[in-house]
Length: 322
Image 1 (spheres, rainbow, N blue to C red):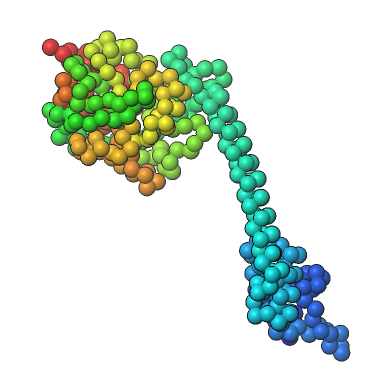
Image 2 (cartoon, helix red, strand yellow; image 1 turned 120 degrees about the horizontal axis):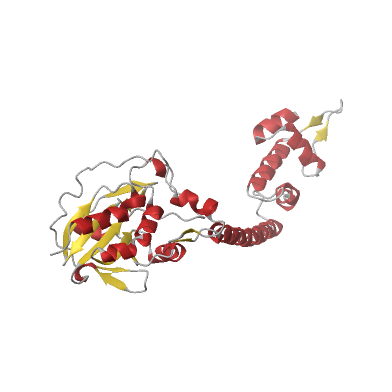
């Protein structure tokens, strides 16, 4: 057969067929007029070499496999030399995986260090040269969509806080039903962004999603004011695990603990509103003022998030405990 027919059968170009011939993998006969005459066996060798190459075996190293066929075996890997070729290819891939894994770890470390180097934010503002590094987390878009009240929190005022213990970033647990006398502020939020991690797709367009970092900073900056207004405890709560939250507490220097509710247990007990982003369930932004084990007041929806702590402080001052 002609070279074009071999190339068609194998799904390669005629240039590839010529390359295989240059390596000595195939040796077509010559006609009297000098044209190459490829046999069925040649066509199969080209096909087998292509398939082995797709597995990651360099074409130059397919010779033992093709010789196995040429020597009368039914399959390219019926010979000991073929099995050795598989082992060599596996060893090569293992080495490449190890090298790539090591390289990936180095890149991840550089990303983490670079992203966090200037991202610590304290009550006096952003440290040093951090303005550019942290602004994408602390600054809110001017066109941030305003969440609407869908009535998902109307049933909460007057409800008793269920018996529930959740892990906190202080290394212990917090019993929500036993916070003690006085008022406690529990603000639930979706997801605090990290400087080395992209926010979920479309995050800015989801009403009530963007602004968790700025909300945390507002509660941090007005923590003393909240206590002066009558808040015995200030607590944040989200569905991220404690290790994730701990990084946020340290980076933002929060003076209060975060509670982790990865299983949405509080939501199940109280019917707190949630939503999904990129297929991941998250808490909607909502704040509960708890007094003596009962939900006294609810802020929902919360907007804007970057001044929400001041909204809570104003309510506490306007509604002193008697």
